[in-house]
Length: 241
Image (cartoon, rainbow, N blue to C red; front, top):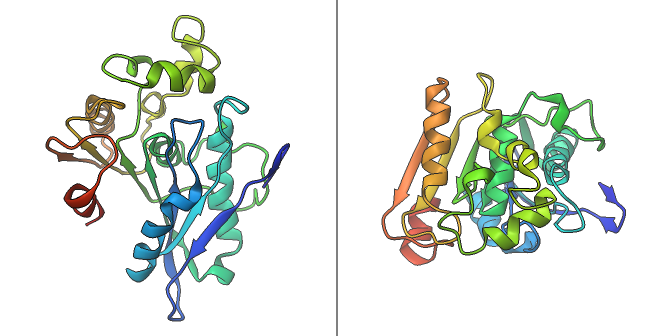
């Protein structure tokens, strides 16, 4: 995908053996304004060793780009992988998304708005679907309006993405919250969250899962007791399993 200041890229890791494998898009974190897709290469390699094709992807970052640009980007990434499924050994009927922190918000959007044309953007490969079968959210924000209380970084991270603080951009906070778009056609989500997260309070995943279940959509919450934001060691191993 071309953007005004260069190109968005992805790194694709796949199993060595011939065949067709489920595809997974990995969406990095970084407070909506930073982070690099390369941070997800270790997980992409582990997923390929477990018989998935894993693509770690770029998306446009705040403050230069605001919501919903990143949603358009990750949907374009799914369409790109489907369009080149043969080249990458992907079974295009089985696609998923994994994101952490800021990237988890975009993975939630992929699952929740999977058949909502207003979130497709103007990117290429529009003949392909951007739908995913499921998504995994590592400590992601689902409700921007309730994201400031109990968070060390929301006051710095959210206004550049949403065009203002809650008081001056409340509508953008509503539209930028995956939780508000949940509908009967949304795909299942697994939310993984630590109870000592000081950036994205644990409740963000509780609210997401409760809202999805209330609408009859499969949703799971994997609680990591005492885990902070950004899993390491045993927490990271458990989340991956």
